[in-house]
Each structure stands twice: as C-alpha cells, then as structure tokens.
Length: 95
Image (cartoon, rainbow, N blue to C red):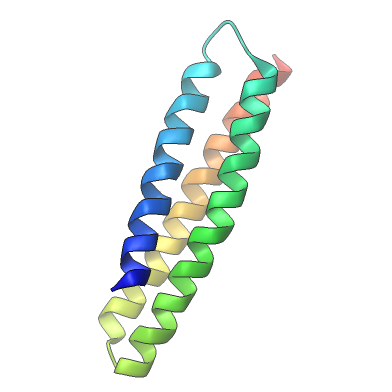
C-alpha cells in the first residue's frame, strides 16, 4: 500500500533528522543547523500525520478497527516524540 510506504519513509526521515539535531545540541552548538532541523521536523511531522490520517480513513472504510487505532496511537506517539525533541533543541539553543 502506497500510504504505508509513505509513512515508513517519512518516519525514517524524521528519525534521521531528530538524531542529527540531537547531536548538534550537544556542543558546540550550531544554532542555524538546529533551527533548520526543527523546521524540517515540523514539516515532516505535518506530512506524516496527514498520511496517518489518510490511513485511518482507509482502515475505517475497510472496517479494520485495530489498524485504525494503531495508526492513531502512532500519530499521537510521533507527535509527542517530535515535540519533546524540538523542546530540547530550543532549550539547547537558549543555553
């Protein structure tokens, strides 16, 4: 399914950027690079959440309640994870 492939690609890309940003936050701090990673993460998160919403709709139409719930939980988890990473990056920039 194309949506699942898109979700995997976006999630993998977010993980790579998050790890890169976390390395940048250690020291010395490259504020411009960290801010760029933050922007990329927000953009990817938005796109990934849209894909997960589309998957939820497909699962709902097919009556696949467990898959729909799993996609919803994944969306919430991703959003929390990325927001936490971005908050840490903002804190690193301030210090």
